[in-house]
Image (cartoon, rainbow, N blue to C red):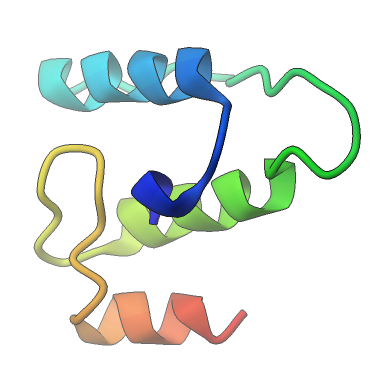
Length: 72
């Protein structure tokens, strides 16, 4: 879940606006060195995109798609 990922505030804000507007950007830039949550951010994004009942930027974490994605 995005709330568990430290940093990447600009990318999270960009996604929040994109989801609210119903249009996703073709790319999202994740900045910073190693250990800043790039992989966790990408996995949270996949989970959110596949979620059956998302709330804003956050996936529900409970639906079948969220459970399958969490196993990645």
